[in-house]
Image (cartoon, rainbow, N blue to C red; front, side, top):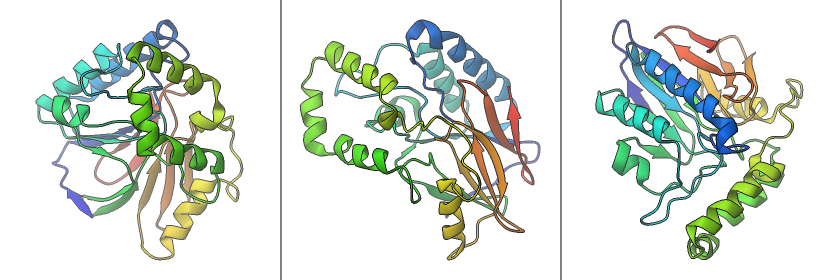
Length: 253
């Protein structure tokens, strides 16, 4: 479990599911501006920032090429990282083809699986949320294809202009790929990330489970001492979570 000491007056911020570039560059640009404004506003008291995946609606790193656009977002992340604010990125189902760009260019570590953190003696289990629990079966099948080395090798040989265009089309149109099952609350007993968290609690205690992926801002008490939080998205809700060293709160920007 990774430990983070939060100095007095500092906070930890969590955001997820911006899907920049969807459904097209023009439509997502105002959302990108709003997100960059949020990043700029939290830099004064941010002790750490967790980005829980799907920042982009599609992201694939060739050896010498990265997708066009998102200059303001990447620039702001570079500025915050260079200023000494730790930023942690958890890969989502739309940007699972990350391969070193964030680490090398932005000094932001990238994680492909959930991780455990102890922040000021409060325990967290943090991840994007895709492929966890008893549901999400369609995406689990898709992920096996997308992460297959042979499939990635063939895709890499497509010219970027063609490859990115094809991937963006399917990313927007295909709900199996997006993992967005209409983003409706299923009820606590059917929310698969809630069920996943409850199973984890059978073997180890966590004060907080924090996920994205569901595109719904949710706060559900799992037992007397543990809580599940889904931080929503930056498409419809513009929500984020903030931890002040003692309490975790869901807010809207």
